[in-house]
Length: 450
Image (tube, rainbow, N blue to C red; front, side, top):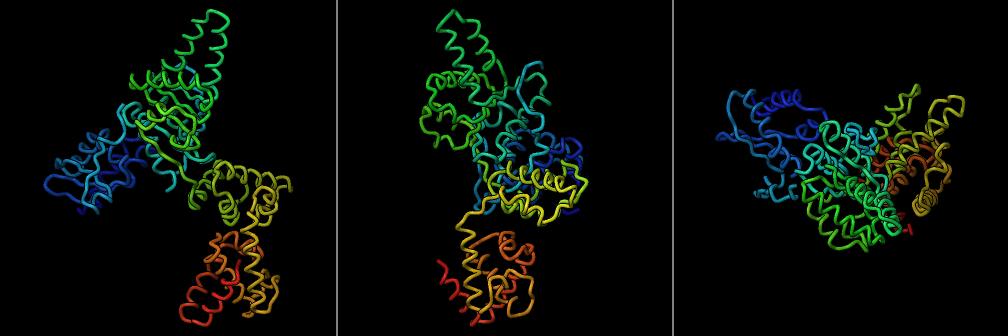
């Protein structure tokens, strides 16, 4: 039996022992690369996976691997960079170790419906590691990134996972503004009366818990006294090995006017940023959202691509665009969803940057002048060579030189789909390799672009 067969048999056994989410994150991308001298060497994607497998799954791994092979092996988990550079990353030095209660968690947000791609895989992996071992993996966990990228979803998913699997644990999710207002209320009451009971209730709320999740910690800026209280709360929880999870729209270093001692404590654990979703991830999110809608009508692929191409940095906007298209189709007496209907429904929803649109219009104008045809011809469906070749050249320039996405180019050229644009670009790429005159002609057009 070869290594792949052995490992696949092992993974089938592991699947039986774990929840699907845990299996997908920790085991699905692993690979057995050698069995030598009683050592099973396994390739993993990240140091988070390496650390978690070694610290929390090793007994299960060794047991199931022995069941499959009939032989006892010790395990060594390695990263690609360790193999290439012949170094070892010491995961022991990464990160610092560690009802009826109203948690404020939104049950809609789960790991199972958080769509993972290259831009957020590390964040999702780290979040699940914390959820599985609260207080023992990365404490505090600090998640940062622009609005609408899934920070809040991940935080609620951590909390929901902990509550589901650790019934006795108290988990509190709170926006930072709420923490500040609670503290201000206590201060106001204390100035007017003996308010020891209210102070006790405040401290119980924020300190007699197992997991504290605070969203938008940058809103602590400007609240000097609240910063002092948060500092004390943080210390109390941390010293008692309680998990702290924090989010912000910027990294700790970029939160101005936040006390340095608080920033220092954020660096004790793990700081992870969520990046804007790549096109493939945006498409996967759209498919997941549409699947959840359980529509009776078809949502065409070119409409999905149109939405994905125009919603680059905000997942919430993807949801809004889908809802708008569905509502518009319903408003039009249940019309089928088509590309033209989607463009009409979203014409005021998407804002195309003037510079982007103007540059493509300039390319169309320059190419039409160069080949003595009209801009309308380039945007038309005419397939004669005197129009089709210049159209492909214009598409090629927009894609390669302006770096525009395929769907936007298609829209500018009369609503062509992205595969038509892709074919045109590929054809011109091949032609200029064997036709120097054509290459020079295209370069002259490019040189005229402002």
